[in-house]
Image 1: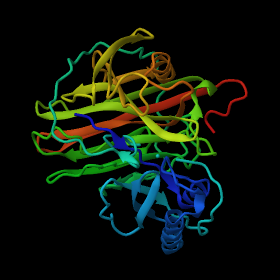
Image 2 (image 1 turned 90 degrees about the horizontal axis):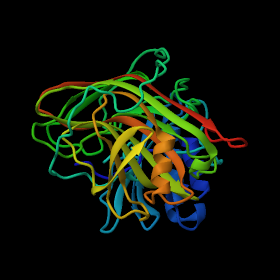
Image 3 (image 1 turned 180 degrees about the horizontal axis):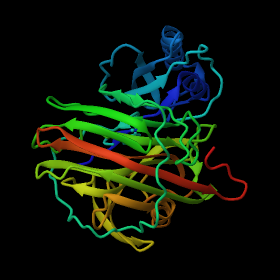
Length: 397
């Protein structure tokens, strides 16, 4: 069963300090501006980590505990034991090889049952426990219009390979994704719920060409990882980009997934949205290829959007703040295209998203639970996002 995750936001260290200065980090407000003890501790931790990696640049993971909008027990070394009524969170940043981090405002944020499922920073909400699984009927007939999806741009440079739980490839400047500018596009491992006997290795050539070799225990039904391509659309003011600023958002994908009788996974978009300064308040998933998983919550509605049939699942009633929503295709489509904006507008107009919602990030990948105890490969061979803005809007900036 899919679980609500913490969104993972991958930022340069300088950007982390900028977000802290605006009293928001990882999609959660830091109380009392940037002068709180938590913010000060975060700044010291980031500066130390940046100094240690300034010569060559490297990935730094920062751990903390979150409660009531406040960060505590901040560390760049090990995950702390968080007090009761607080949750562990983590962020991954890239230290700069050219200069130390400075507390200047910067651009912004990012992982399902992982932000890449929501908060894989505040995130990947609590790990899913074993839950009943139900298979969706597979169908070779496309459920969405596959009309000539653009091919992925050529691979960029040497392939990146990582087996680290929080391994990251990127950031990339990727022409196949609108808004990709070299700082907010990554491919991430996102093993957010590691369990005994599970392993995963990510090999990425670009955001549209990557694969994971995963070995997950037979019979496991809880999501272990969400390897995915992640694109952040949070504004430079660290607020969601209003949906009203988009004229269109479409995405195409092509993947190759295992077909073993004991495999348990689904391929899905993981979208994070919010309102005003309330970043990453809501996780919305679009499931396109399901093999054995059941969405969080319960089935609450059916919808046909642009000729595509969905079953709508929600963790709470329509209109509830922060309710996780999953839109599950009526038939599996391993490759195809999705009209993301029309799907989100349907949710908003039918009360499953608050009015005036905005976009924080779009991720696409696989939630993996089991590979039957043997290595299996999940490969993305084509992926893109095309977004256009309404007049006067900078929706992809």
